[in-house]
Image (cartoon, rainbow, N blue to C red):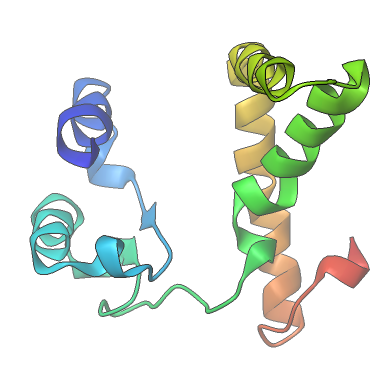
Length: 131
């Protein structure tokens, strides 16, 4: 997926050279094959991940759009209809994922900039209580 979808899409849009790639340190994310691909695609200085020059901060929900936005957003939308079965819950999740617009995603990801600034001012400590 990384090679065939994400990197290919970034290359098609001429964004590969200016993209900074962030990922947590989950074992599959730091396998030698993945690290080699990331180094070839981004170089060591544009990857935030374990075993690179810039490690992803451990336990950093303040920096992950999925943690600080997506899961809460989806939960509020999915449970609005009060699903009464597992099938209804799965259908609601699929439906709500399809309704997320590019503008919503842009807004969530763009929010990383003030979060990083706040994180710097707080010496890397958690910032959720400030938001």
